[in-house]
Every structure is written in C-alpha cells, then in structure tokens.
Length: 219
Image (cartoon, rainbow, N blue to C red; front, side, top):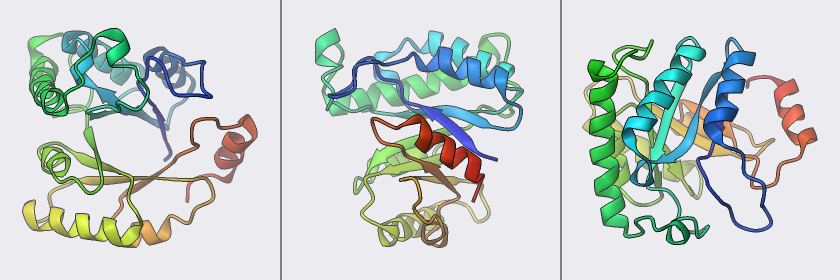
C-alpha cells in the first residue's frame, strides 16, 4: 500500500508559485482511489482553526473509508508564509499551540463533533520534527508516529529508533516515516527502524518522475 501526502502551504519559496489547496486535492485523491493511504505532511496547527481541521480530517477519513493519516508539525518559517499573514513565528509559542491543538482535535474526534472518524480509536497522527531536536520526538511518542526531517543518514535514524524503543512500552505500535528521494534504496532505512518510506519529489517534480515511481509500485 502506498501513501500520498500533501504539504499544507499557503505560499512557497522560489521557483514555486502555484500552490494547490491540500484538503481539496486529497478529497479528489480519496474519491479516485481505494487502497492508497493519504495524508498531510505536515499541517501546522498553530496557524489553523482546530475546529475546522477537525471537520476536514473527519471528512477525508469518511471519503477515503478510513485511509487518512494526519501529519502535523510546527511548520517551516523558510517560506515567509507566517510573517506575511500575521501568524505566530516564535517556535516555543507554535509548539504550545500545536500541543493544545492536538488535545482539542482528539476531543473533537472522540465524539464532541459528529460524525466521528471511521478509524478507531482515532485517526493516526504522525508528528514531524527536525533532526537532531528531541522535543518533537517526545511529542510524537504521545501519538502514533514520527516523521524525522533532515536526517543525515540511516545511522541517525537508528539512534532515534533506539531511543524510541527504550521509552515506549514493549510491542506498542509506532510508525517511523522517512522521506527519501526517488530511486533511493529504502532497505537501509528499514534496517535502521523505518516502518514507512515516502517518496520526496522535491519542490518541482515532473509528471514523468511521479509516474515512474507509481508505475514501479511499492518496494
């Protein structure tokens, strides 16, 4: 089973100018597929109204028959899309808002809003974090998975997964999701503890690149 992710950007850095809305795009993907797991990598909750995100995520979970994964994180400040729209830029405050937003979201999913997600006990939550910071890792351990960004190689991932195994209950389900470029061998990452690898096409993928990966099938 492959996964399809969309980043939640409003604007992006040059040379990218055209940015689609991820929620509308994922709704189209959900309705056109039956086995693909879909999700966002990543949604910065600090700049979103959590009650709206609750409606969007549950709608996608229902449209996809329970195939939606919610990726979250602080979001990047590299693209100038926070200051430009008056959003919070301080990392500590964004982290506080992220934790508060996740707690609210879990409450909405648990029945405060209807309908509830098809997936139980909740929609899976994968938390992104920049290597080598450990606070995002600790946050991820309270949820369902970690998406480490900027890993220098599989050895760094093995270090992280070793720490995670030591702090989680034995046998507890937990996903470790590593973005890799097209054509990279996923096996070293799997040996280092990755449970998923997702293809990172960069900021300007070509249609031919994407089709080649899709045609090659899961590895």
